[in-house]
Length: 382
Image 1 (tube, rainbow, N blue to C red):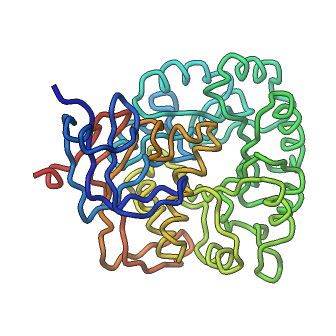
Image 2 (cartoon, rainbow, N blue to C red; image 1 turned 90 degrees about the vertical axis):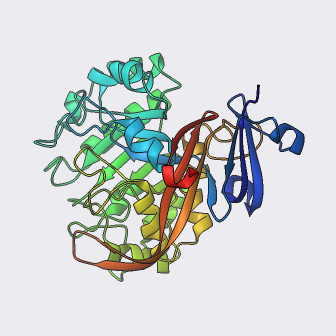
Image 3 (tube, rainbow, N blue to C red; image 1 turned 60 degrees about the vertical axis):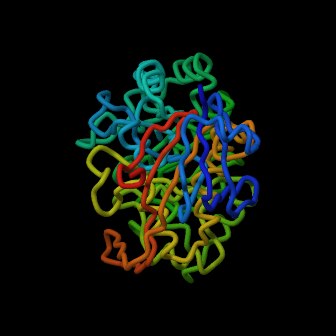
């Protein structure tokens, strides 16, 4: 009886190995294995990917996945697998009050590989009706350290939201306290800063290597990563040099196309592309899902290899899973996705009315997760 999956004739793009060429991929026993014609002939399933793009399973590094735990949570497998996404990270949906249930019920109940950032607010982002409490006096350090110790393989770090809509009048106090706890936990801090009350330099100069600034291209209010001359500020460049990660995490309203264009023109692309998808934004304009974000950055001029890297090898390393996921190298987990680069005019718009015209859209055809076909479009097969 045959076993495994043989993906043949596809254009394989694997930034982790610097590969962009036509080759065959063989998956057996849930792993990528070195290709050999004899072994391929024994495969139970053969997929002809001629004219298609074959990528490592994509990773959405910033999503909200607490399905049925919060009113923002999407169903991870339904959002991910039909769109070529085989791994994702929840960006602070739950705090210590819900983290254990998240690990047991969401991570334990999904095919998608999932990790999480724990919100420093105990209740996390339970609802969009009002924000979590960012008062540092309310941060429960003992509980945070305990939950990180209990689930060291699943909890990547801590999450904090700052800005006029979340922490009015508190200034840098939540950040200073969150950084203290993150250091003691030995975990990075992921910071959401929108519509800031203070210059970005005040935040960026306090972040360390491995910390993450999400929504790095947000344009709300008077402060952003750009300086008064419309150039990427020195604080952002110093932070990147220290190893701070800049995640686009575009969301519905957390990006400004005019600002993105200036940053890209100034040689400052994102390290990671992600969605910040929630239950009310998945499959809706201006977000849809990760393939929309990838197609948007293609339209803005980011090369395809770099777009793919920002959704595969780069987030895999941040998940401490580099070499295991985010690559099609032999020995890696058997996660792969097949797409068609659909050509034709497509327009992208942000909340400010800025637009970007593109001519490529990544359309999902099939997803393989852990060596099993998890999704395939019927018109791709027949």
